[in-house]
Image (cartoon, rainbow, N blue to C red):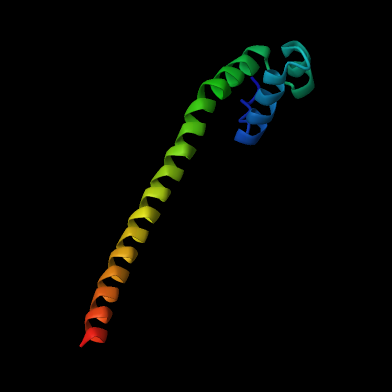
Length: 93
């Protein structure tokens, strides 16, 4: 028996990307990378299905960052308004 190969995530992504591009057939890719064509199809399907979730997660994280920054700026505006009112009252006296 031969030992099972454990491929890195980078290697799997590289092969899946080439399969998605369809510049070569799966049989050609299998021969080029010494991987079974069924495995290439599996990696390709996984890459396509996870692509949308990855893109949406990045967008959600950016939205959370924006919300946190907006809250921070609102609190700063409130602080500056209070200081302005205080200084105006002090100036009028």
